[in-house]
Image 1 (cartoon, rainbow, N blue to C red):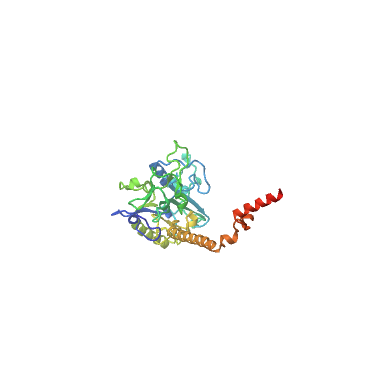
Image 2 (spheres, rainbow, N blue to C red):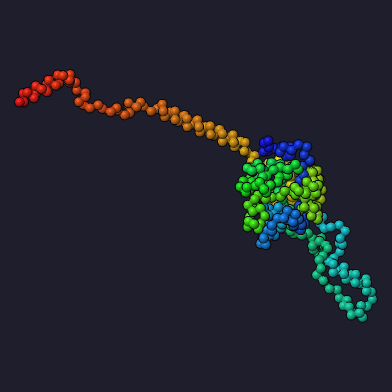
Length: 379
């Protein structure tokens, strides 16, 4: 059964599944991601993914760097010299007074009334250097001049997955949950899927054979196919302490995400937007979409992703027409050359007969008599 390569479509039905469950997916709300990397750790633990090394990268403030064969979840850290927004910052219920050292001294004053010099206690208040619970500035009305953006990136499990379309072995397949999974025992490591992915997610694992698992095999997030098949949440969503990573039915997640955007914009976060939730984009909608607080490029995401196999049918048609045109041109050229060639006799004269054979002579008997007469005269 051939699957569609573009446009809105039911991914599971298009893949041939009958009576499949609701399509599952991720909604990642970056506005509440704290960058703890619990999702990365849980993913590696559950899927037995090898380590990424210990090189610290300033580009990502960690050592994993980006998504790859050994990094199925990656938390991106982005520092920006701008304020968080126009919303109220801080948490409800926290003290609005001065630094914690002031609170400590106030507690001491109330606990030890009277003259404390007799106790050998210095009555001079000392700044203990403890953090403040108020906003920046002397009067507690300032605002931070920078912000952190954090995003837990993952495979998008695209509606139109180019990696799946180009796989020659059938190693990549669409599950009954609408996710895209690699079968390690079928993948031959050809790597066709790697350049096909518009997000640069899937890759072949490198390492020492016999030491590292699945060396040379294409690897990526499976959305914990084994766990969701047993009615469990993916490991990353289970470990997330802020519910930044939410798992569930894709339609329900889209409704929840839209409501969250409206809430943030009403609070003054006017840059809040969804990425990948629309079924009318170049991918047909993502199975793992995001709420972003800035443009997609800031997070390392393509602004308008398009499935790389979208034009395959048109390319094959054009290639077929080009082949027919070339064949027709070759036949025409051959036929024109044959008709334009002059006759053989006009281009190359036939072999000339010997001159003697062209001079007429007497019959054989007369020739013999003549030769005899010549001989008699000479004697």
